[in-house]
Length: 290
Image (cartoon, rainbow, N blue to C red; front, top):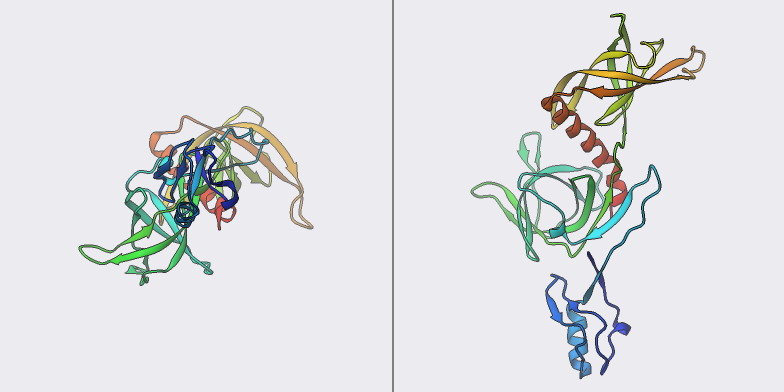
């Protein structure tokens, strides 16, 4: 369910409303079938900003593409402590904050960004694009700082959005990476190379030679930067596919290995998911920017 703004020409005097009307805070103003009797009443309502609900029945997205969605913020499954991203209008820098809470139609409370151990100085009225990841979707909305609070701890009151735009990331989506990796094949020989794309269920490992044959069980070791810290992973995988690819100019071909992770521990799965979704978050941010 989402809301769209009602155009002035859609509201006619003396004619029953075709749908209920809501204000910018999703508060019901007039029920379906209500009749406006005067131009003054009509202009007063239009001045408040009128919206109506739209039932969404999105078509399935083509393979490999994301589905665009639009909905009220309260329809997004938000949890206290979730990471959100703030990007000031016209600036490249992006700052990560934590969701403290929100009151529908009033404000969204987030922690104040910290840069190099210091609280970032922000001003009331400053505008941002706010982005967040929930479930398998990345959402974004425009918001303005309503109040900067410094005690008992630094946090911000951000304006509450009428609607948020989102992109639903397809299952199994991979993020491009360049991770130095060591792979040990079934013959216990170790091969050095790089992971060039990564998902929560597998990876593409590229090396100078074959690390095994199809359906071999192998292990791989690599490091990830997650939430400002380094995490070391040692995972088991099945070799599902082999691809020969051109190497750098003047170099012999390289070999791509399609890997499927197996027997992930809960700890490894959590680290892997955090890294992959954060990268997908970044990649989708441009598509959800205003």
